[in-house]
Length: 195
Image (tube, rainbow, N blue to C red; front, side):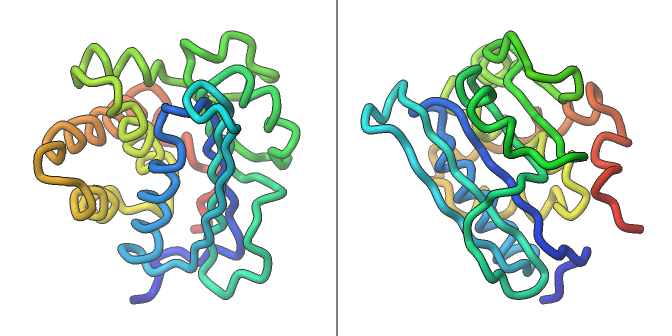
């Protein structure tokens, strides 16, 4: 399968606190981009020794061609789900890169150029389960990133979930996609579109 949009090298960092599902989010998106979309993807991760409540990050490097270096250093997209993560990793965002944040938890963004949604509250109030927050994030990113096909990413998500949590996570994914489209607008990912 040939990727639908050529990518030279695209770097994403998911960051936040242990227990927010950061690593799972990176794995699901990476798998969807590799198996569902046909890209080459590397995934690296790290988290503090505290696990829950400590810092956590997961990086993806995505490319149509071979990836020479697997670690992300010059981010096209930074997803920050805590203030600490935002402060720590914002300097790695390249000029023209996009910052996506958890608007309830990141009270002092380092720039006024960002996209935000209250992911935690959305998961709790609209989906009914806090643990689905990372799936709401995945849904919003499937809208934002022009090289992600929403249906393909949703199928990938559903293929790896246990049956008992499939429906709730599909609901969370669709909610994230719908709200990103409504709040951020169609031109949100324009800086990455090649056509």
